[in-house]
Amino acid sequence: MSAHRARRIFKALTVAALFTALLTACASRPRGVLQPVAASPSANHVEMLVATMRDRSDNPGEMFSGERAPKPAFAEITVSIPPANARKVGEVAWPRKLPPDPATEFATVKAEEVDRSAAEKWLSNSVRRSPDRSVLVFIHGFNNHFEDAVFRFAQIVHDSRAHSAPVLATWPSRGKLLAYGYDRESTNYTRNAVERLFQYLARDPEVREVSILAHSMGNVLALESLRQMAIRNDGLPAKFKNVMLAAPDVDVDVFRSQIEDMGKQRPQFTLFVSRDDRALAVSRRVWGDVARLGAIDPEQSPYKEELAANNITVIDLTKLNEGDRLHHTKFAESPEIVQLIGSRLSTGQSLSDSRLGLGDHIVAATAGAAHTVGTAAGLVVSAPAAIIDQNTRENYAHHVDALAGPVGQANPGTTYIDCSKQARVAQCSR
Image (cartoon, rainbow, N blue to C red):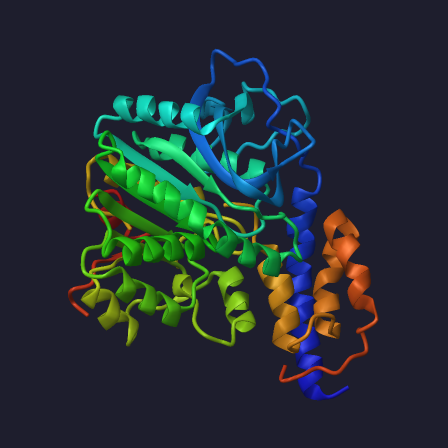
């Protein structure tokens, strides 16, 4: 074995060790948590509207699957969140067994599919209750089951104390470790539906302000939908105030062109970056070694000058220790940051989950070793997941025959906030 190949295998083994610990922690979590249970008097409730291009699931506790539906569906969901003494801010207290205990765990107390007319009525009523007649749209990232997106958004809404009407725009993600390609194409599949949602919010006279929060691969969907809307309408509506890009798994060159296509009148963008984001580091290897937007150094050229020229706020989370071990969900799991999001939205200030993005690493480690799936490095990385995760076991056999295959070649104007432990009180809570 060549030294070059040995180094790649060693790197893959290092990542595999991390996967083993993470997957073991997630292995016992029950699925189907959206079956409604009785509410607890001590719990808090988050009501949300769901718009989705996911197909329906045969399991009532899952509600929607990861497959693609021919047309949008809508749902009204109420999530019960345990009191403050039962969980810390930023944490999704997943049920340890079913049915969940609403006094100590996240639970669903209402989950009903509704038609478009009922969805519009829910939105109208919710917007009227909002102090500033605002809407917050959340678009989740890669490797999310429907329930993952629902519980993560409920956590964000509750912990941020945002007063906007919450709308979850969820796209068909299979929630599988090796389904990165399928998920990526699903963002393209959902683009028209999300643009139609944005167009509806733009036309609705009761909605005075719209903010968008997207995470990871969900940023691809958010940005492409906004770009498409801007081209169609010759600009974006003034009521679209904030677009928050959390750990965006977006090619920096593509982002540059998307911003240009949106024109001069566009929302205030806020970019959450973390240079230690391991998911984005490996995604970069998948996509031709082009920097991912969520992992840039905003103080380095050309990013510093471009961010300033486009008036993009940057919040640097690199030095924060909160979040998953891949450093990919800091925006939602750091108490200071999630509350910063809510406080800025509630006061009208500008601001620009998800399950762990392990598939980013698995697919990327394979593509980094060669340009075809099924290399030795890819199999080494996938092995711990194949032991634990059923979905990985189903896919793993297809790659075994390739085990012995060859390894290929294979500016001052920027608003910049450093959210290190030392700076967070002064910078992040203002």
